[in-house]
Length: 144
Image 1: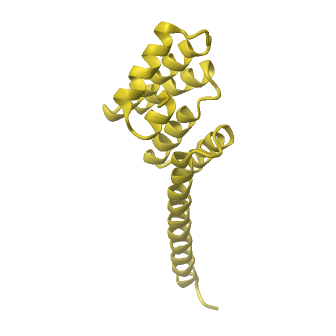
Image 2: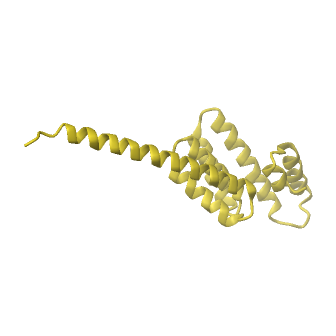
């Protein structure tokens, strides 16, 4: 199983072993070294985010994208972090980038469905708040 597939399935130990093997052996494929660095940056970004430093985590993801703009798992993680920070439109945008790079990824599709649901709930809640606010403002107007 390849490192990216193992990572997508949540088998992080196997993914790291695979990336490390490719980076050491190089297998005549020059991109393996930066794929491994990108993997390490994703993992470190997750740690930073979990430890309460989202700015550092997002900075690491941006570095990873600068090295490997085709790493859909970086876009995916960026999407997840943005959603957790309440930045749903940015989360949706990052998920769209991931889908362009990896249109058949089940992980990306599942995240899109979750984001669509969250955006729908948020939009419904926003409409309810707007409706309540408009009712309240009409009642406060003097009647002529």
